Image (tube, rainbow, N blue to C red; front, side, top):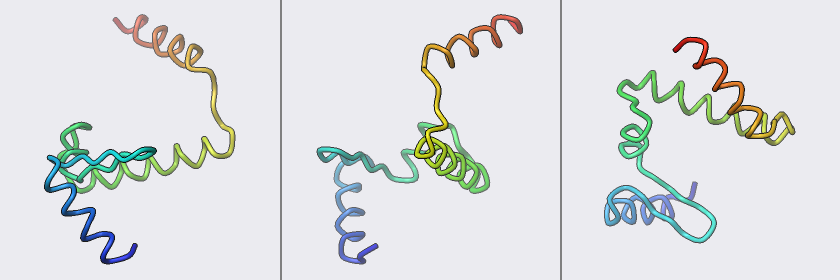
Length: 82
C-alpha cells in the first residue's frame, strides 16, 4: 500500500472514531473490528482475518448458497440444541 495513502487513511480513521465510509467501501480500525467481533487476542484476530479471506475466496469461486437455506440450517441446528 502507498505509504502516503496509508498515512491519510490512518488520519481519517482517527478523526472518525475508527470507521471511514466512502461510496463503495468501508474501512475500520483494528480496534473497532476487535470490539465488533469480540476479539481479544492477536491469535483470535489472525484467525478471524484468515476466515474472512477464506470466505471471500470461496464466494469468488461461486461456493455460495441461498441465505434462506443457510438460515434454515442454523435454525434447525440451534432449535435442536435449545
